[in-house]
Image (cartoon, rainbow, N blue to C red; front, side, top):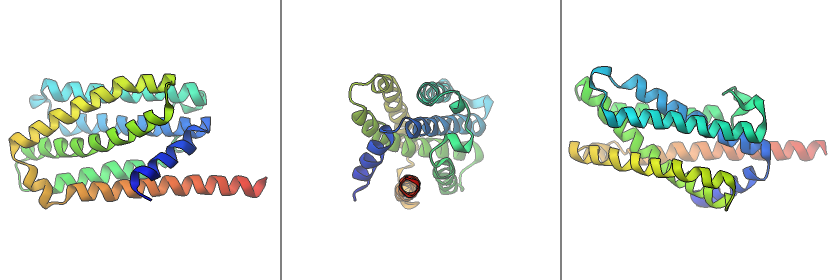
Length: 213
């Protein structure tokens, strides 16, 4: 099944169950938080510009907004990132961490400050492209619901982030490095691994439910 069709099937299953839906939302809150944390930890304060600082704060705000919706759907137990409140949280974090490591390695021959900036920009570009695909599919599945309306602002900011980092990468002439390191293919592989983990979790859940019925 093509990746987007797989995603649409997964999303349809998730949003039909309020607890799964809350776990899904909290997982994306967690990923937004990881993005916020990585920006803050990877950038030197002396050279932290307005655009990157704004991006960090917006990622933090996305994490907060998604968490609030998760709590509204699933109750107060979703006010944490405990493993049981996430949907394949370990696989989700591995997607981000492994991609970050691949991008950092691709620019390992650069000076520290330049490597940090280019790794940040390349990870952000790859993740934002994927996030737009996922959030758009999720928003379509939600129709005209309140959650779909709340996603509109988040999507607009993700589009802005992607435009900014793609401009930085173009100015730095980093496209050849990204192509040579096959970073887009690596991101695709990691995303497929995450989708597979979610499918396995959902299959196991429904098989278990049928066995106890």
